[in-house]
Amino acid sequence: MPTPSPAKARSQRPGTKVNSLQDEIDRLTERFGTERKALIPILQEIKKRHHIISGYAMQCVADRLSISPAEVYGVVSFYSFLHEEYQGRIVIRLCRTISCDMAGKDAIARQLQNDLGIKFGETTDDGKFSLEWANCVGMCDRGPAILVNEQVFTHVTPEKVQEIIQACIKMYEKTPDLFKKNGHSHEHSK
Amino acid sequence: MNIRNEVTFSTIRPRDGLKAALEKSRTEVVDDILRSGLKGRGGAGFPTGIKWKLAAEEKADEKYIICNADEGEPGTFKDRVIFSEWADLVFEGMTIAGYAVGAKTGIIYLRGEYGYLRQALEDKLAARHQEGLLGDKIMGKEGVSFDIHIHMGCGAYVCGEESALIESLEGKRGEARNRPPFPVAKGLFGKPTVVNNVETLAWVAAIFALGPDWFKHVGTEKSSGYKLLSISGDVAKPGVYEFPMGTKISAILKTAGADRPKAAVVGGASGILVPAKDFKRAICFEDVSTGGSVIVLSEDRDFLDILENFQEFFADESCGQCTICRLGNVKLLEGIRLLKEGRCTTKHLQKLCTLGAAMQAASKCGLGQASPNMFLSVLQHFKGEVLGRPQAEDHFANKRKAS
View 1: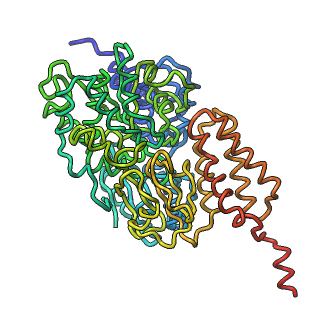
View 2 (view 1 turned 30 degrees about the vertical axis):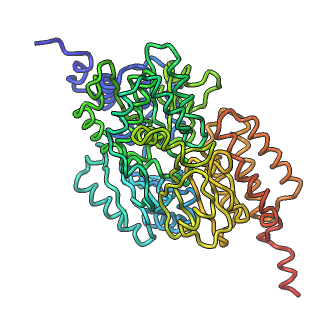
Protein backbone atom coordinates (compact mmCIF):
# COMPACT_ATOMS: atom_id res chain seq x y z
CA MET A 1 0.00 0.00 0.00
CA PRO A 2 1.41 3.42 -0.90
CA THR A 3 2.07 5.86 1.91
CA PRO A 4 -0.82 8.30 2.14
CA SER A 5 -0.03 12.00 1.63
CA PRO A 6 -0.17 14.17 4.77
CA ALA A 7 -3.48 15.57 3.63
CA LYS A 8 -4.94 12.09 3.20
CA ALA A 9 -3.52 10.91 6.50
CA ARG A 10 -5.27 13.75 8.27
CA SER A 11 -8.58 13.15 6.54
CA GLN A 12 -8.55 9.52 7.67
CA ARG A 13 -8.46 10.55 11.31
CA PRO A 14 -11.87 10.98 12.88
CA GLY A 15 -11.41 14.73 12.91
CA THR A 16 -13.30 17.70 14.23
CA LYS A 17 -14.84 20.18 11.85
CA VAL A 18 -11.77 22.35 12.21
CA ASN A 19 -9.55 19.55 10.95
CA SER A 20 -11.80 18.90 8.02
CA LEU A 21 -11.45 22.56 7.05
CA GLN A 22 -7.67 22.18 7.15
CA ASP A 23 -7.94 19.12 4.94
CA GLU A 24 -10.17 20.94 2.56
CA ILE A 25 -7.68 23.80 2.27
CA ASP A 26 -4.92 21.23 1.67
CA ARG A 27 -6.92 19.81 -1.20
CA LEU A 28 -7.50 23.30 -2.58
CA THR A 29 -3.77 24.03 -2.54
CA GLU A 30 -3.21 20.74 -4.37
CA ARG A 31 -5.59 22.03 -7.03
CA PHE A 32 -4.56 25.70 -7.23
CA GLY A 33 -0.99 25.58 -5.91
CA THR A 34 0.63 27.40 -3.01
CA GLU A 35 1.79 30.51 -4.86
CA ARG A 36 0.27 33.88 -4.05
CA LYS A 37 -1.79 33.82 -7.27
CA ALA A 38 -3.72 30.86 -5.85
CA LEU A 39 -5.09 32.99 -3.00
CA ILE A 40 -8.21 34.39 -4.64
CA PRO A 41 -9.32 31.13 -6.34
CA ILE A 42 -8.91 29.33 -2.99
CA LEU A 43 -10.90 31.99 -1.14
CA GLN A 44 -13.61 31.90 -3.82
CA GLU A 45 -13.97 28.14 -3.34
CA ILE A 46 -14.14 28.43 0.46
CA LYS A 47 -16.79 31.14 0.16
CA LYS A 48 -18.80 29.05 -2.31
CA ARG A 49 -18.79 25.96 -0.09
CA HIS A 50 -19.10 27.46 3.38
CA HIS A 51 -20.76 30.85 2.73
CA ILE A 52 -18.21 32.40 5.07
CA ILE A 53 -14.46 32.91 5.16
CA SER A 54 -13.81 32.64 8.87
CA GLY A 55 -10.80 34.00 10.70
CA TYR A 56 -9.66 30.42 11.17
CA ALA A 57 -9.94 29.69 7.45
CA MET A 58 -7.94 32.84 6.68
CA GLN A 59 -5.21 31.69 9.07
CA CYS A 60 -5.09 28.22 7.52
CA VAL A 61 -4.84 29.67 4.02
CA ALA A 62 -2.13 32.11 5.12
CA ASP A 63 -0.23 29.21 6.64
CA ARG A 64 -0.41 27.09 3.48
CA LEU A 65 0.59 30.00 1.24
CA SER A 66 3.32 31.17 3.63
CA ILE A 67 1.96 34.70 3.85
CA SER A 68 0.70 36.77 6.76
CA PRO A 69 -2.96 36.32 7.79
CA ALA A 70 -3.19 40.12 7.55
CA GLU A 71 -2.49 39.81 3.81
CA VAL A 72 -5.34 37.32 3.47
CA TYR A 73 -7.66 39.54 5.50
CA GLY A 74 -6.67 42.49 3.32
CA VAL A 75 -7.83 40.59 0.25
CA VAL A 76 -11.03 39.21 1.82
CA SER A 77 -12.10 42.65 3.00
CA PHE A 78 -11.28 44.28 -0.34
CA TYR A 79 -13.54 42.27 -2.64
CA SER A 80 -17.30 42.51 -2.27
CA PHE A 81 -17.85 38.86 -3.32
CA LEU A 82 -15.62 37.54 -0.54
CA HIS A 83 -16.99 37.76 2.97
CA GLU A 84 -15.64 37.32 6.46
CA GLU A 85 -19.13 36.95 7.90
CA TYR A 86 -21.68 34.24 7.24
CA GLN A 87 -23.91 34.81 4.25
CA GLY A 88 -27.03 32.85 3.41
CA ARG A 89 -27.04 29.94 0.96
CA ILE A 90 -28.92 32.21 -1.39
CA VAL A 91 -27.46 35.67 -1.79
CA ILE A 92 -29.79 38.12 -3.46
CA ARG A 93 -27.99 41.14 -4.90
CA LEU A 94 -30.07 44.00 -6.21
CA CYS A 95 -28.34 46.29 -8.68
CA ARG A 96 -28.46 49.84 -7.35
CA THR A 97 -26.62 51.60 -10.16
CA ILE A 98 -28.03 54.28 -12.38
CA SER A 99 -30.03 52.48 -15.10
CA CYS A 100 -31.61 50.03 -12.66
CA ASP A 101 -32.21 52.95 -10.31
CA MET A 102 -34.01 54.86 -13.07
CA ALA A 103 -35.99 51.71 -13.93
CA GLY A 104 -37.42 51.57 -10.40
CA LYS A 105 -35.06 49.60 -8.19
CA ASP A 106 -36.34 51.34 -5.02
CA ALA A 107 -39.70 49.55 -5.17
CA ILE A 108 -37.93 46.22 -5.65
CA ALA A 109 -35.67 47.00 -2.69
CA ARG A 110 -38.63 47.72 -0.41
CA GLN A 111 -40.48 44.59 -1.48
CA LEU A 112 -37.40 42.39 -1.03
CA GLN A 113 -36.99 43.76 2.49
CA ASN A 114 -40.67 43.23 3.27
CA ASP A 115 -40.85 39.70 1.90
CA LEU A 116 -37.58 38.47 3.37
CA GLY A 117 -37.99 40.33 6.65
CA ILE A 118 -34.40 41.58 6.57
CA LYS A 119 -32.62 44.74 5.55
CA PHE A 120 -29.78 45.06 3.06
CA GLY A 121 -26.58 43.60 4.48
CA GLU A 122 -28.50 41.12 6.67
CA THR A 123 -29.10 37.35 6.63
CA THR A 124 -32.34 35.57 7.56
CA ASP A 125 -32.32 33.66 10.85
CA ASP A 126 -32.63 30.30 9.08
CA GLY A 127 -29.44 31.11 7.12
CA LYS A 128 -31.14 30.71 3.76
CA PHE A 129 -31.12 34.27 2.42
CA SER A 130 -28.82 37.25 2.45
CA LEU A 131 -29.77 40.56 0.90
CA GLU A 132 -27.03 42.72 -0.61
CA TRP A 133 -26.64 45.66 -2.94
CA ALA A 134 -24.64 45.20 -6.13
CA ASN A 135 -22.99 47.90 -8.17
CA CYS A 136 -23.81 47.78 -11.90
CA VAL A 137 -24.34 44.13 -12.91
CA GLY A 138 -24.35 44.92 -16.64
CA MET A 139 -28.08 44.46 -17.25
CA CYS A 140 -28.73 48.15 -17.80
CA ASP A 141 -30.94 47.49 -20.83
CA ARG A 142 -33.18 45.20 -18.80
CA GLY A 143 -33.38 46.67 -15.33
CA PRO A 144 -34.20 46.41 -12.57
CA ALA A 145 -31.92 43.39 -12.30
CA ILE A 146 -31.03 41.09 -9.45
CA LEU A 147 -28.39 38.42 -9.13
CA VAL A 148 -29.40 35.35 -7.14
CA ASN A 149 -26.12 33.58 -6.48
CA GLU A 150 -24.92 33.32 -10.08
CA GLN A 151 -28.30 33.53 -11.78
CA VAL A 152 -29.60 36.79 -13.11
CA PHE A 153 -33.22 37.97 -13.13
CA THR A 154 -34.13 40.97 -15.26
CA HIS A 155 -37.13 43.28 -15.68
CA VAL A 156 -37.99 42.53 -12.05
CA THR A 157 -41.23 44.03 -10.79
CA PRO A 158 -42.41 44.27 -7.17
CA GLU A 159 -45.00 41.55 -7.77
CA LYS A 160 -42.33 39.22 -9.19
CA VAL A 161 -40.23 39.45 -6.02
CA GLN A 162 -42.26 36.82 -4.14
CA GLU A 163 -42.19 34.54 -7.21
CA ILE A 164 -38.41 34.70 -7.33
CA ILE A 165 -38.09 34.01 -3.60
CA GLN A 166 -40.44 31.01 -3.89
CA ALA A 167 -38.47 29.65 -6.85
CA CYS A 168 -35.29 29.92 -4.76
CA ILE A 169 -36.86 28.11 -1.81
CA LYS A 170 -38.13 25.34 -4.07
CA MET A 171 -34.73 24.88 -5.66
CA TYR A 172 -33.08 24.93 -2.28
CA GLU A 173 -35.42 22.29 -0.84
CA LYS A 174 -35.13 20.03 -3.85
CA THR A 175 -31.35 20.08 -3.95
CA PRO A 176 -29.81 21.55 -0.82
CA ASP A 177 -26.35 20.82 -2.21
CA LEU A 178 -27.04 22.71 -5.38
CA PHE A 179 -25.82 26.02 -4.08
CA LYS A 180 -22.65 24.46 -2.79
CA LYS A 181 -21.58 23.62 -6.32
CA ASN A 182 -21.18 25.83 -9.31
CA GLY A 183 -24.58 27.44 -9.35
CA HIS A 184 -26.40 27.96 -12.60
CA SER A 185 -25.80 29.38 -15.97
CA HIS A 186 -29.38 30.16 -16.86
CA GLU A 187 -30.80 33.54 -17.24
CA HIS A 188 -34.38 34.36 -16.39
CA SER A 189 -36.15 37.16 -18.09
CA LYS A 190 -39.66 38.24 -18.76
CA MET B 1 -30.10 39.33 -26.67
CA ASN B 2 -31.22 42.92 -27.36
CA ILE B 3 -28.92 43.59 -30.28
CA ARG B 4 -30.72 46.42 -32.00
CA ASN B 5 -29.04 46.93 -35.37
CA GLU B 6 -26.69 45.23 -37.80
CA VAL B 7 -23.46 44.35 -36.05
CA THR B 8 -20.36 43.53 -38.11
CA PHE B 9 -19.45 40.66 -35.78
CA SER B 10 -22.50 38.71 -37.02
CA THR B 11 -21.03 38.66 -40.52
CA ILE B 12 -17.57 37.39 -39.54
CA ARG B 13 -16.95 33.65 -39.80
CA PRO B 14 -14.81 32.41 -36.93
CA ARG B 15 -11.46 31.06 -38.19
CA ASP B 16 -11.24 33.52 -41.10
CA GLY B 17 -9.40 36.15 -39.08
CA LEU B 18 -7.10 33.69 -37.35
CA LYS B 19 -6.25 31.94 -40.62
CA ALA B 20 -5.42 35.22 -42.35
CA ALA B 21 -3.26 36.36 -39.41
CA LEU B 22 -1.30 33.12 -39.15
CA GLU B 23 -0.41 33.34 -42.84
CA LYS B 24 1.50 36.54 -42.09
CA SER B 25 4.69 37.06 -40.13
CA ARG B 26 4.47 38.35 -36.56
CA THR B 27 5.74 41.78 -37.63
CA GLU B 28 3.18 41.96 -40.43
CA VAL B 29 0.40 41.19 -37.96
CA VAL B 30 1.47 44.09 -35.72
CA ASP B 31 1.82 46.35 -38.77
CA ASP B 32 -1.69 45.46 -39.93
CA ILE B 33 -3.16 46.44 -36.57
CA LEU B 34 -1.16 49.68 -36.64
CA ARG B 35 -2.43 50.38 -40.15
CA SER B 36 -6.05 49.65 -39.21
CA GLY B 37 -5.91 52.47 -36.64
CA LEU B 38 -7.62 50.31 -34.00
CA LYS B 39 -7.70 51.98 -30.59
CA GLY B 40 -8.68 50.46 -27.25
CA ARG B 41 -12.44 49.97 -27.00
CA GLY B 42 -12.49 49.97 -23.18
CA GLY B 43 -12.61 53.75 -23.18
CA ALA B 44 -9.04 54.99 -22.89
CA GLY B 45 -8.41 54.69 -26.61
CA PHE B 46 -4.74 53.75 -26.59
CA PRO B 47 -3.61 52.55 -30.04
CA THR B 48 -3.70 48.74 -29.93
CA GLY B 49 -0.92 48.35 -32.48
CA ILE B 50 1.51 50.42 -30.41
CA LYS B 51 0.69 48.38 -27.31
CA TRP B 52 1.40 45.17 -29.23
CA LYS B 53 4.56 46.56 -30.82
CA LEU B 54 6.00 47.54 -27.44
CA ALA B 55 5.19 44.14 -25.94
CA ALA B 56 6.58 42.34 -29.01
CA GLU B 57 9.88 44.20 -28.71
CA GLU B 58 10.37 43.12 -25.08
CA LYS B 59 12.67 40.19 -24.52
CA ALA B 60 11.25 37.77 -21.96
CA ASP B 61 10.82 34.05 -21.40
CA GLU B 62 7.11 34.53 -20.79
CA LYS B 63 4.53 37.07 -21.95
CA TYR B 64 0.81 37.34 -21.29
CA ILE B 65 -2.31 38.42 -23.13
CA ILE B 66 -5.09 39.49 -20.81
CA CYS B 67 -8.64 40.02 -21.95
CA ASN B 68 -10.20 42.66 -19.71
CA ALA B 69 -13.75 41.40 -19.20
CA ASP B 70 -14.29 43.26 -15.94
CA GLU B 71 -17.02 45.31 -17.56
CA GLY B 72 -18.13 47.40 -14.61
CA GLU B 73 -18.69 50.90 -15.94
CA PRO B 74 -22.30 51.83 -15.15
CA GLY B 75 -24.40 51.56 -18.29
CA THR B 76 -22.01 49.25 -20.16
CA PHE B 77 -23.09 45.76 -21.18
CA LYS B 78 -21.68 45.27 -24.69
CA ASP B 79 -18.99 42.84 -23.49
CA ARG B 80 -21.64 40.59 -21.97
CA VAL B 81 -23.41 40.54 -25.36
CA ILE B 82 -20.14 39.95 -27.24
CA PHE B 83 -19.37 36.96 -25.00
CA SER B 84 -22.88 35.61 -25.38
CA GLU B 85 -22.96 35.95 -29.15
CA TRP B 86 -19.46 36.13 -30.59
CA ALA B 87 -17.09 34.67 -27.97
CA ASP B 88 -15.04 32.90 -30.65
CA LEU B 89 -14.00 36.24 -32.12
CA VAL B 90 -12.62 37.31 -28.74
CA PHE B 91 -10.70 34.03 -28.37
CA GLU B 92 -9.33 34.55 -31.89
CA GLY B 93 -8.30 38.11 -31.14
CA MET B 94 -6.41 36.84 -28.10
CA THR B 95 -4.75 34.09 -30.12
CA ILE B 96 -3.70 36.58 -32.79
CA ALA B 97 -2.35 38.92 -30.10
CA GLY B 98 -0.41 36.02 -28.59
CA TYR B 99 1.08 35.18 -31.98
CA ALA B 100 1.98 38.82 -32.65
CA VAL B 101 3.77 39.54 -29.38
CA GLY B 102 5.08 36.04 -28.68
CA ALA B 103 2.84 35.12 -25.73
CA LYS B 104 1.67 31.58 -25.07
CA THR B 105 -0.78 32.27 -22.27
CA GLY B 106 -4.03 34.18 -22.40
CA ILE B 107 -6.18 35.00 -19.40
CA ILE B 108 -9.75 36.23 -19.43
CA TYR B 109 -10.47 38.28 -16.33
CA LEU B 110 -14.24 37.81 -16.18
CA ARG B 111 -16.13 39.89 -13.65
CA GLY B 112 -17.77 37.94 -10.84
CA GLU B 113 -21.18 39.33 -11.75
CA TYR B 114 -20.93 37.46 -15.09
CA GLY B 115 -20.42 34.05 -13.44
CA TYR B 116 -23.38 32.69 -15.42
CA LEU B 117 -21.42 33.17 -18.65
CA ARG B 118 -18.49 31.06 -17.53
CA GLN B 119 -19.63 27.54 -18.35
CA ALA B 120 -20.54 28.37 -21.94
CA LEU B 121 -17.15 30.05 -22.41
CA GLU B 122 -15.31 27.04 -20.95
CA ASP B 123 -17.24 24.76 -23.34
CA LYS B 124 -16.30 26.93 -26.31
CA LEU B 125 -12.64 26.94 -25.25
CA ALA B 126 -12.70 23.14 -24.98
CA ALA B 127 -14.22 22.91 -28.46
CA ARG B 128 -11.50 25.16 -29.86
CA HIS B 129 -8.90 22.84 -28.36
CA GLN B 130 -10.59 19.91 -30.11
CA GLU B 131 -10.50 21.77 -33.40
CA GLY B 132 -6.80 22.64 -33.07
CA LEU B 133 -7.47 26.35 -32.66
CA LEU B 134 -5.89 26.41 -29.22
CA GLY B 135 -3.03 24.43 -27.72
CA ASP B 136 0.08 23.46 -29.66
CA LYS B 137 0.54 23.88 -33.40
CA ILE B 138 -2.51 26.05 -33.92
CA MET B 139 -4.06 25.47 -37.37
CA GLY B 140 -1.18 23.08 -37.97
CA LYS B 141 1.39 25.87 -37.84
CA GLU B 142 4.66 24.79 -36.24
CA GLY B 143 5.77 26.83 -33.24
CA VAL B 144 2.44 28.58 -32.69
CA SER B 145 0.90 27.61 -29.38
CA PHE B 146 -1.54 29.47 -27.20
CA ASP B 147 -3.87 28.66 -24.36
CA ILE B 148 -6.66 30.60 -22.65
CA HIS B 149 -7.77 30.41 -19.02
CA ILE B 150 -10.65 32.12 -17.30
CA HIS B 151 -10.12 33.91 -13.99
CA MET B 152 -13.18 35.09 -12.09
CA GLY B 153 -13.23 38.56 -10.57
CA CYS B 154 -14.72 39.18 -7.14
CA GLY B 155 -16.85 42.27 -7.50
CA ALA B 156 -14.49 45.22 -7.58
CA TYR B 157 -15.02 47.98 -10.16
CA VAL B 158 -11.45 49.25 -9.87
CA CYS B 159 -10.13 45.94 -11.25
CA GLY B 160 -11.19 47.15 -14.68
CA GLU B 161 -8.14 49.44 -14.46
CA GLU B 162 -5.40 47.36 -16.07
CA SER B 163 -2.75 47.54 -13.34
CA ALA B 164 -5.33 46.89 -10.60
CA LEU B 165 -6.54 43.92 -12.66
CA ILE B 166 -2.99 42.58 -12.80
CA GLU B 167 -2.59 42.99 -9.03
CA SER B 168 -5.85 41.06 -8.60
CA LEU B 169 -4.60 38.25 -10.87
CA GLU B 170 -1.51 38.04 -8.69
CA GLY B 171 -3.71 37.39 -5.67
CA LYS B 172 -3.62 40.85 -4.17
CA ARG B 173 -5.99 43.71 -3.44
CA GLY B 174 -6.96 45.44 -6.66
CA GLU B 175 -4.92 48.60 -6.16
CA ALA B 176 -3.55 50.41 -9.20
CA ARG B 177 0.20 50.48 -9.68
CA ASN B 178 2.45 53.44 -10.34
CA ARG B 179 3.35 53.81 -13.99
CA PRO B 180 5.88 53.53 -15.52
CA PRO B 181 6.74 50.71 -15.80
CA PHE B 182 3.76 50.00 -18.03
CA PRO B 183 2.29 46.50 -18.25
CA VAL B 184 3.72 46.02 -21.77
CA ALA B 185 7.16 46.06 -20.10
CA LYS B 186 6.44 44.76 -16.60
CA GLY B 187 2.95 43.41 -16.15
CA LEU B 188 1.66 40.15 -14.74
CA PHE B 189 4.35 38.53 -12.54
CA GLY B 190 6.74 41.19 -13.86
CA LYS B 191 6.47 39.91 -17.44
CA PRO B 192 5.45 41.85 -20.57
CA THR B 193 1.66 41.87 -20.66
CA VAL B 194 -0.91 43.13 -23.12
CA VAL B 195 -4.26 44.02 -21.58
CA ASN B 196 -7.01 44.52 -24.17
CA ASN B 197 -10.74 45.03 -23.82
CA VAL B 198 -13.16 42.31 -24.98
CA GLU B 199 -14.45 44.43 -27.85
CA THR B 200 -10.94 45.42 -28.99
CA LEU B 201 -10.00 41.74 -29.31
CA ALA B 202 -13.16 40.92 -31.24
CA TRP B 203 -12.33 43.76 -33.67
CA VAL B 204 -8.86 42.27 -34.12
CA ALA B 205 -10.45 39.08 -35.46
CA ALA B 206 -12.76 41.16 -37.69
CA ILE B 207 -9.85 43.26 -39.01
CA PHE B 208 -7.96 40.17 -40.14
CA ALA B 209 -11.09 38.67 -41.68
CA LEU B 210 -11.96 41.81 -43.65
CA GLY B 211 -8.58 43.54 -43.94
CA PRO B 212 -7.04 46.53 -42.12
CA ASP B 213 -8.01 48.94 -44.88
CA TRP B 214 -11.68 48.08 -44.51
CA PHE B 215 -11.47 49.18 -40.86
CA LYS B 216 -9.32 52.24 -41.58
CA HIS B 217 -11.85 53.60 -44.05
CA VAL B 218 -14.71 53.59 -41.56
CA GLY B 219 -15.09 56.31 -38.95
CA THR B 220 -13.03 59.49 -38.65
CA GLU B 221 -9.39 60.20 -39.33
CA LYS B 222 -8.36 59.74 -35.69
CA SER B 223 -10.98 57.15 -34.72
CA SER B 224 -11.28 54.40 -37.23
CA GLY B 225 -13.83 51.64 -37.33
CA TYR B 226 -17.10 50.98 -35.63
CA LYS B 227 -18.01 51.12 -31.95
CA LEU B 228 -20.52 49.10 -30.01
CA LEU B 229 -22.65 51.23 -27.73
CA SER B 230 -24.70 50.06 -24.77
CA ILE B 231 -27.71 52.35 -24.65
CA SER B 232 -29.99 52.49 -21.62
CA GLY B 233 -32.07 54.92 -19.59
CA ASP B 234 -35.02 56.83 -21.02
CA VAL B 235 -35.12 55.23 -24.46
CA ALA B 236 -37.77 53.11 -26.17
CA LYS B 237 -35.25 50.55 -27.42
CA PRO B 238 -32.41 50.02 -24.97
CA GLY B 239 -29.72 47.57 -26.06
CA VAL B 240 -26.48 47.17 -27.97
CA TYR B 241 -25.97 49.16 -31.18
CA GLU B 242 -23.12 49.43 -33.65
CA PHE B 243 -22.27 52.84 -35.09
CA PRO B 244 -19.32 54.11 -37.11
CA MET B 245 -17.00 56.27 -35.03
CA GLY B 246 -17.89 59.91 -35.49
CA THR B 247 -21.67 59.39 -35.42
CA LYS B 248 -23.50 62.35 -33.89
CA ILE B 249 -25.16 61.82 -30.53
CA SER B 250 -28.46 63.13 -31.93
CA ALA B 251 -28.48 60.37 -34.58
CA ILE B 252 -27.74 57.73 -31.96
CA LEU B 253 -30.53 58.92 -29.67
CA LYS B 254 -32.98 59.00 -32.55
CA THR B 255 -32.17 55.42 -33.50
CA ALA B 256 -32.63 54.26 -29.92
CA GLY B 257 -35.89 56.15 -29.54
CA ALA B 258 -34.90 58.63 -26.84
CA ASP B 259 -37.80 60.06 -24.88
CA ARG B 260 -37.64 63.90 -24.64
CA PRO B 261 -33.92 63.78 -23.86
CA LYS B 262 -32.58 66.55 -21.64
CA ALA B 263 -29.05 65.18 -21.53
CA ALA B 264 -27.06 62.02 -22.12
CA VAL B 265 -24.45 60.54 -19.83
CA VAL B 266 -21.71 59.32 -22.16
CA GLY B 267 -18.98 57.08 -20.75
CA GLY B 268 -20.81 55.96 -17.62
CA ALA B 269 -20.11 57.26 -14.14
CA SER B 270 -16.59 58.19 -15.29
CA GLY B 271 -17.88 59.93 -18.38
CA ILE B 272 -19.39 63.32 -19.03
CA LEU B 273 -22.85 64.80 -19.20
CA VAL B 274 -23.79 66.03 -22.66
CA PRO B 275 -26.72 68.48 -22.54
CA ALA B 276 -29.28 68.51 -25.38
CA LYS B 277 -27.75 71.65 -26.94
CA ASP B 278 -24.54 69.66 -27.55
CA PHE B 279 -26.16 66.60 -29.16
CA LYS B 280 -24.49 67.60 -32.42
CA ARG B 281 -21.23 66.41 -30.90
CA ALA B 282 -19.89 63.07 -32.13
CA ILE B 283 -18.90 59.81 -30.46
CA CYS B 284 -15.19 59.37 -31.21
CA PHE B 285 -11.89 59.70 -29.40
CA GLU B 286 -11.34 63.31 -30.51
CA ASP B 287 -14.77 64.51 -29.38
CA VAL B 288 -16.90 62.56 -26.86
CA SER B 289 -15.07 59.37 -25.97
CA THR B 290 -16.77 56.39 -24.38
CA GLY B 291 -16.12 52.79 -23.53
CA GLY B 292 -19.64 52.19 -24.80
CA SER B 293 -22.00 53.53 -22.16
CA VAL B 294 -24.75 55.93 -23.20
CA ILE B 295 -27.44 56.65 -20.61
CA VAL B 296 -30.27 58.90 -21.72
CA LEU B 297 -31.92 61.25 -19.23
CA SER B 298 -35.38 62.60 -20.02
CA GLU B 299 -36.72 65.98 -18.94
CA ASP B 300 -38.32 64.37 -15.88
CA ARG B 301 -35.00 63.39 -14.32
CA ASP B 302 -33.44 65.30 -11.47
CA PHE B 303 -29.69 65.70 -11.94
CA LEU B 304 -29.09 65.57 -8.21
CA ASP B 305 -30.61 62.08 -8.00
CA ILE B 306 -28.36 60.96 -10.85
CA LEU B 307 -25.30 62.59 -9.28
CA GLU B 308 -26.03 61.10 -5.88
CA ASN B 309 -26.25 57.63 -7.43
CA PHE B 310 -22.93 58.04 -9.24
CA GLN B 311 -21.21 59.50 -6.22
CA GLU B 312 -22.41 56.67 -3.94
CA PHE B 313 -20.94 54.33 -6.53
CA PHE B 314 -17.51 56.00 -6.39
CA ALA B 315 -17.48 56.36 -2.62
CA ASP B 316 -18.12 52.61 -2.47
CA GLU B 317 -15.72 51.54 -5.21
CA SER B 318 -12.68 53.73 -4.47
CA CYS B 319 -9.90 51.31 -3.58
CA GLY B 320 -8.74 53.70 -0.87
CA GLN B 321 -5.04 53.97 -1.55
CA CYS B 322 -5.10 57.64 -2.63
CA THR B 323 -6.38 59.95 0.09
CA ILE B 324 -7.86 62.42 -2.38
CA CYS B 325 -10.00 59.76 -4.03
CA ARG B 326 -10.96 57.93 -0.83
CA LEU B 327 -12.05 61.09 1.01
CA GLY B 328 -12.81 63.32 -1.96
CA ASN B 329 -15.59 61.09 -3.17
CA VAL B 330 -17.21 61.06 0.27
CA LYS B 331 -16.97 64.87 0.44
CA LEU B 332 -18.57 65.25 -2.99
CA LEU B 333 -21.36 62.90 -1.93
CA GLU B 334 -21.97 64.98 1.20
CA GLY B 335 -22.03 68.08 -0.98
CA ILE B 336 -24.63 66.57 -3.32
CA ARG B 337 -26.80 65.72 -0.32
CA LEU B 338 -26.46 69.29 0.94
CA LEU B 339 -27.60 70.51 -2.47
CA LYS B 340 -30.58 68.14 -2.33
CA GLU B 341 -31.50 69.47 1.07
CA GLY B 342 -31.17 73.03 -0.21
CA ARG B 343 -28.45 73.85 2.30
CA CYS B 344 -25.32 74.21 0.17
CA THR B 345 -23.74 77.66 0.04
CA THR B 346 -22.21 78.95 -3.17
CA LYS B 347 -18.89 79.23 -1.36
CA HIS B 348 -18.99 75.57 -0.32
CA LEU B 349 -19.90 74.60 -3.85
CA GLN B 350 -16.87 76.45 -5.15
CA LYS B 351 -14.69 74.55 -2.71
CA LEU B 352 -16.18 71.27 -3.93
CA CYS B 353 -15.35 72.22 -7.52
CA THR B 354 -11.75 72.94 -6.49
CA LEU B 355 -11.70 69.58 -4.75
CA GLY B 356 -13.00 67.92 -7.92
CA ALA B 357 -10.23 69.50 -9.98
CA ALA B 358 -7.65 68.33 -7.44
CA MET B 359 -9.05 64.79 -7.61
CA GLN B 360 -8.66 64.83 -11.39
CA ALA B 361 -5.06 65.95 -11.05
CA ALA B 362 -3.82 64.03 -8.03
CA SER B 363 -5.41 60.57 -8.15
CA LYS B 364 -3.19 57.70 -9.19
CA CYS B 365 -5.58 55.83 -11.47
CA GLY B 366 -8.45 56.47 -13.81
CA LEU B 367 -11.10 55.83 -11.17
CA GLY B 368 -10.05 58.77 -8.99
CA GLN B 369 -9.21 60.99 -11.93
CA ALA B 370 -12.62 60.46 -13.53
CA SER B 371 -14.78 60.30 -10.41
CA PRO B 372 -15.55 64.04 -10.18
CA ASN B 373 -16.27 64.37 -13.95
CA MET B 374 -20.02 64.03 -13.67
CA PHE B 375 -20.26 66.40 -10.70
CA LEU B 376 -18.27 69.08 -12.53
CA SER B 377 -20.17 68.41 -15.76
CA VAL B 378 -23.58 68.92 -14.11
CA LEU B 379 -22.41 72.14 -12.45
CA GLN B 380 -21.01 73.41 -15.71
CA HIS B 381 -24.28 72.98 -17.58
CA PHE B 382 -27.05 72.99 -15.00
CA LYS B 383 -25.86 74.96 -11.99
CA GLY B 384 -29.13 76.89 -11.87
CA GLU B 385 -31.11 73.68 -11.48
CA VAL B 386 -29.23 72.39 -8.47
CA LEU B 387 -28.92 75.52 -6.33
CA GLY B 388 -31.62 76.88 -4.04
CA ARG B 389 -33.64 73.71 -3.62
CA PRO B 390 -36.48 73.81 -1.08
CA GLN B 391 -35.51 72.68 2.40
CA ALA B 392 -37.51 70.15 4.38
CA GLU B 393 -38.31 72.92 6.84
CA ASP B 394 -38.73 75.58 4.20
CA HIS B 395 -39.02 78.97 5.86
CA PHE B 396 -40.17 80.65 2.66
CA ALA B 397 -42.70 77.97 1.78
CA ASN B 398 -44.19 78.16 5.28
CA LYS B 399 -44.37 81.90 4.99
CA ARG B 400 -46.29 81.61 1.76
CA LYS B 401 -48.72 79.15 3.31
CA ALA B 402 -49.30 81.45 6.29
CA SER B 403 -50.13 84.41 4.09
